[in-house]
Image 1 (cartoon, rainbow, N blue to C red):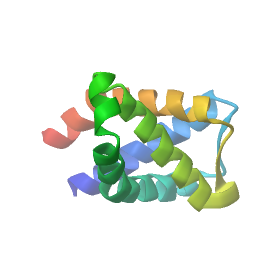
Image 2 (cartoon, rainbow, N blue to C red; image 1 turned 90 degrees about the horizontal axis):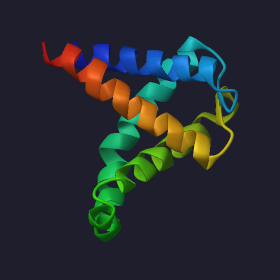
Image 3 (cartoon, helix red, strand yellow; image 1 turned 60 degrees about the horizontal axis):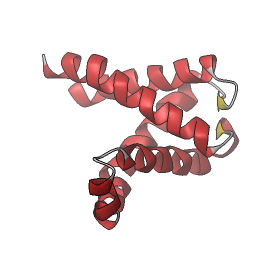
Length: 114
C-alpha cells in the first residue's frame, strides 16, 4: 500500500513539474502515473548499475553526481514513454531530478514512513 501511495505522489510531482516548466511535458495524469511506474522500475534496475559504474566521480563530487544519474533515468523514462512524456533537454531533466529529490526527501518519505 505504501508503494502505491509513493507511486501516486511521484506522479503528482511529475504532473506538477509538467505544469511549471514548458520543457517538461506530460500528456495526462495517467501518463504521469505510467511515467512514475517506469521511473520506479528504472530506479530499481538501472540506477544501481550506473551508481556502481560511476562511483569514482560520485565520490569526487561528494554525491552530487547522483543527480546526474537521476536525470539520466528521467531521460530514459521519457524515451520509453514516447510522445506522452517529453523532456526538452538534459538541463531540464537535471532540474527536475533535483526537485523530485527534494519532494521525496521532505514530502514523500515522511508520509510513507508513518
